[in-house]
Image 1 (cartoon, helix red, strand yellow):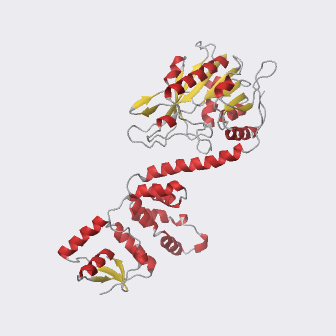
Image 2 (image 1 turned 60 degrees about the horizontal axis):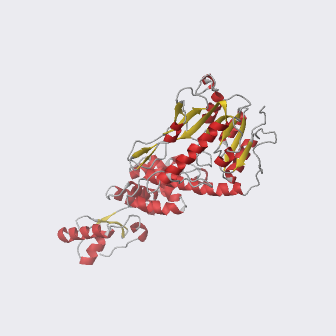
Image 3 (image 1 turned 60 degrees about the vertical axis):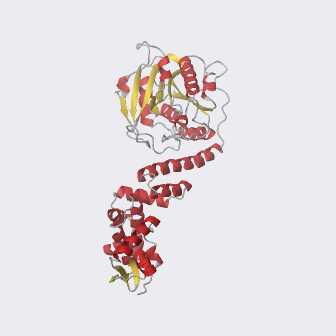
Length: 445
């Protein structure tokens, strides 16, 4: 008996591996073709490999006639049958179920009796039905859909790794999200760098007072050395964490900055940061404070901590609970916190400017979601910065951020009627920060 093999039906399922085919062939040679080959009007819908082996060895086989309304119904049956039979990973299950999407959408719309052109696939919840067929959660199925639709070069590599069980669906989505943000940010910052920004050449007036309410482009250590001693009331900043160094060959997510390579030999990094904090202490007024954001990391099985901060006189360490992170490793508990080291210039609590009653977050753990929508890779949430400003400064004070980035500290200072100064290497970051700040009404005393 000669049967017809429709390539469209045959290609629905991943082909057997050479090993799987050899095992099937040996079993059939020993026991014969035990399972019927399912056909629909002479076309094979299940049993392509069994039929190929039977023809090769001239073995008898039985057929089972199937009845379908159309190709779509046949395809649905084929996929559902194989999903219950083949040993596939979640990703491959989802790929098979995705092949049912178009007929499912059409059928769902028709069942609702609605105009096919005026209803979306989402409104009939096809994803939920297909996820059940693939035996995965609706969330996992949606993530596989996103990966399949992605046109970034990394997507093809991720699909191959998913097929080979080298990465989970969640892991692939995290890597895809990181890469997409990098690509978007490169285009975004290139556009801002090409815009004309305000040319700021000086930090200090002829009379020795500082120029406030400006964002300056340059190396923060060089710029802060130009500020007069005891000229700033409050400093809030977050340096690059040197993640690039600790990410080498590891599953650590590093930050892709515009004009800064976050990969410095650790001892050199500690020296640079110590020098910066020393300058911060110099430019602070007697009542002033530095709030220095950083975090603990794990490298080669050991905790890495910004120990250089203890060479000064921290008053308190505030824990910022970010509620989540994109950590890819599984060798430690998922890290979701960062710290703010509060270093006042004076050890005398009566001198330090601070009023806890002004705080929205008055304890030493602040549960605040990280900034999600900023194009900058490491932006402060406004809520966090504002909580520091209202507690540790007065209206009219000067707030400095040596790593101003997208300008959140300066923007919050302006909103709260403080003066600001910002430093950053990136022209793109600076132009973007100035645009954000300019949208706020000028009412600082």
